[in-house]
Length: 337
Length: 196
Image (cartoon, rainbow over all chains, first blue to last red; front, side, top):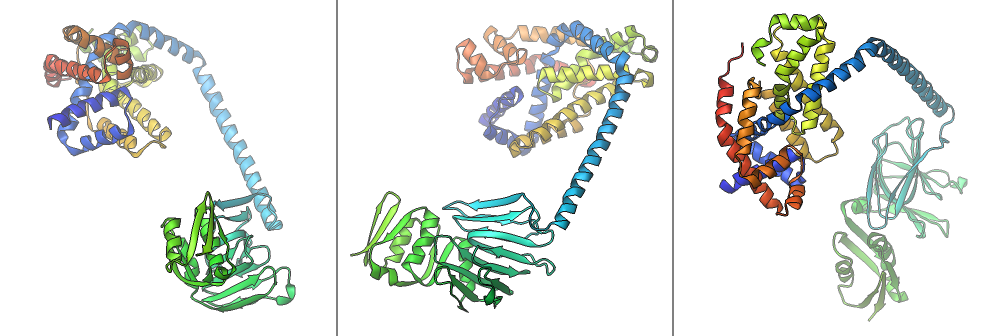
């Protein structure tokens, strides 16, 4: 208690002088809360301190009075006039600002109604390599961006329609609104819906664009191939579009696995090591090279916890100790033993 | 100068724009109100500014003053301190939660302490305080005065006096302890003074 006491007084000295660290502020406010004794001490110290100032205050009294008189004399003759003038000025300023802001907002509202979709201001959110980002769009739609991805939408988002452009991988929980269609543009492929949960993977450096539907229904369209029309997919469907062959296919799968990355896990079903290494590259910001053609064809299933280190993950992949894994700088070489 | 000189007549004179009466009110209350403000605001310049605003306001509103004026003055100082602390909280919103807690505590303190110090006949007390400070051991007194009157930080005092910061702190604590003893009768007397 004694040491606590000393401590309290030191903390008070620092606090009164205005030079107190954040940690000490916390300690002081905890002490003050902890017992009424400290509050009494606080009270006593402050009063003693205030009393100690009396000689100094008395000494400056006359000088300060002159200062007050000066201020009063400065204020008095002009006071009434300047006050009312200032008052009027404030009112005028308020009206001017109101008129300007109303006309500016009317201009924007009108413009957005008449020219949908081409508002000039564009928002972009980027999830850098190695990190993930969660975005909440103006209509409460939630988007998780996987590492190395970006999402763009413009100012008119949510006014007449809801359009976003995705590069990379995103998991969408779209707020239901039957009147305003939600569209994800990926360049080659558009995903349209009105309120569902789905995952879109469209990294520019990968051959395939994958759409996994977890809930509801989405319609996929290919802007470059109008003949294909709308392809409707159902929950637990996976839709894959190949950028090179321009062919698409869809099949049943456990789609919710595709969204596991939002929880810090990676899940693979019959994935090649090449596909897995793409995900690992983005997550850990490394380059993975597979030196052997045979390894590239091997298929893996399972889930990986992305909180583990890359080394640990690679050792899980190589459970049979078939591979030789060498790391030089940011490049990892996988070869057969 | 005594508080008993503040009579209804004096207030009426102030209402009639008699500067001499105003000056008398100032003489009686200036030091006291500063001491009140210093119980709430630790920076003496800020405290003084708040008190000055109260006096200037009294003059501006002199036509509507009423007697007694004592609680009006104290309340005005308290409001000035509250406004300052609240403004500080708004401007320092980015600060940590603990700073906020301390500001909360201070605000609570202002609101719950009806009068921090009962009215004191400042001239008499001035002598006592001056003596009490003069009787502090020299080193201790110098450090205390540097800290209190010149608003220096413990670090600055340590550098000037060529001693460690912890020594400064210990000396400040000793000074406070000694003053607590030598001025304790004042605190007791203050409570016994009955106003009006």
